[in-house]
Length: 97
Image (tube, rainbow, N blue to C red; front, top):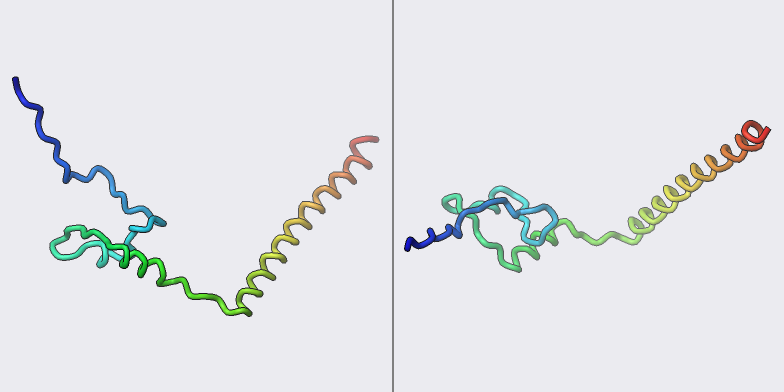
């Protein structure tokens, strides 16, 4: 009997370096080191990459973001209320006559 050929476990079928995943590397230089081989990332390296852009907001910036979000929500609500009001006017003066 012939033996089945050994599967090559080193072959990469698809790149699993997906944006948003903890192991995702941001720059090309971080991704490939000596000889073009991909290196495994340690947990301390992934924590460093995740914390690069996470600077805390000041109190003024936080309140500014909250105020802008509330204004945006009120604006969207006003658009919906305006559409409902126009629909009611359409029903009263055009559709039900």
